[in-house]
Structures are given as structure tokens and as C-alpha cells.
Length: 88
Image 1 (cartoon, helix red, strand yellow):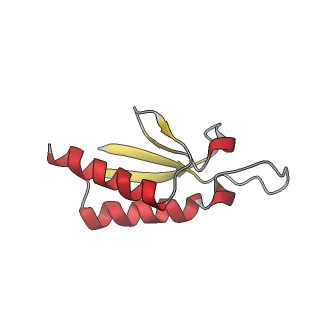
Image 2 (tube, rainbow, N blue to C red; image 1 turned 180 degrees about the vertical axis):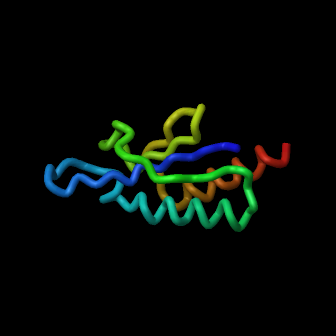
């Protein structure tokens, strides 16, 4: 089973950029809903800081490179890729 992590870290005090402040929690919810709707053999979970705050929101399919600057269109593309991978 593939595992996908989404950084949902917030940095409210420091003023530094964070994935959570850029909407990553909504992206995680969208990803989880897409996985369930497509009945994909993978799971997504929240993660603490992945160390790429300035490039966020950050998502990573474990074993693959980070995907930086994730947005709703990127989540849909990722879901399409996961579905294609599962069919093969």
C-alpha cells in the first residue's frame, strides 16, 4: 500500500512560511476523499514539518521525490497518477 504524507505544519508565532498556512489541511482532505472515491490502495496522512516550508504545501508519496507547491489541481493530477498506477 502506498503511503502519502502531507505537511500540515503551522508556524503561527515565527512568521515564517508554513504548509498549514497555505491550505495543506484542505488539500489533505481533498486527497483522502479522492482516495476513498476512487477506491485506491493507498492512504494519506498529515505530517509535521518536512523541511521545505518555503516551497509548500509539500506532499510526498513515500519512496518518491517531494512535490512542492501543491494545489487542488496537483492533488487531482496525483490521484489520476495513483489510479493509473493501480490499474497496471
